[in-house]
Image (cartoon, rainbow, N blue to C red; front, side):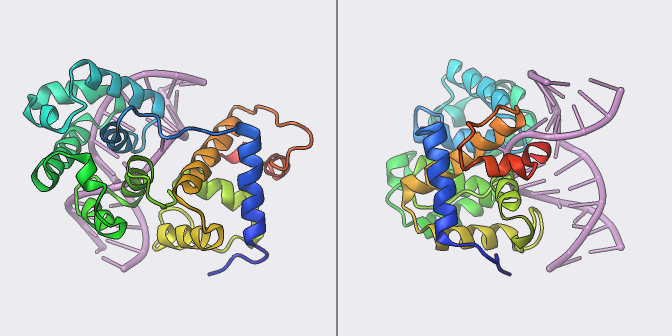
Length: 233
DNA sequence: GACCAGGCACATC
DNA sequence: GATGTGCATGGT
């Protein structure tokens, strides 16, 4: 398992070019850490625009609080998250997450923030509806931990960037998440803010390429366009 | 009308 | 353990 020809320099080049092109992405959209966690669950296999509608519904009903969420009737919660799809499952996941927060941490997100990242990650992964990507999104964007989120965008953009030298397993294959995440974090050796921005900028790039928005002529990111990445992301 | 979008759990082999 | 399938809506 290796990436021939890769180097810390090339990854930092991507990061620097992305930052210069897009600026500070200010991720994740969310007014509170709890809202970020809710968004991480709601966005599973779902476009963010649909998640925004669901979060807006929840905000309108005062459900963006673990205690309020737990005391609300289930059908009210289901109705609120309807636009995000998978409403029955996601409503159950949100209840499960809120229950965990209230029972273990008294509903205080600040108490969760005191827990070592590896332990908190293990706890999150034990909950139904929280896989590696969702747990890492919470750790990085709600708890400001130095964790790089690996999602389909990250995988596909980097796959295209490295081209034939990309020898890590593809999304969905065994060990792919930890392998790719470990590879990138070893080389980037960044802090929480850098990992936060790196993943966010990759997503912005992928979305821009989807929309076929042209990059400036001297931008190092044109390498993505030259390899036809806009055709596949 | 088909396909996709910031996954995950569970059943089956 | 690996693979396939269900979950569900809104936008394109």
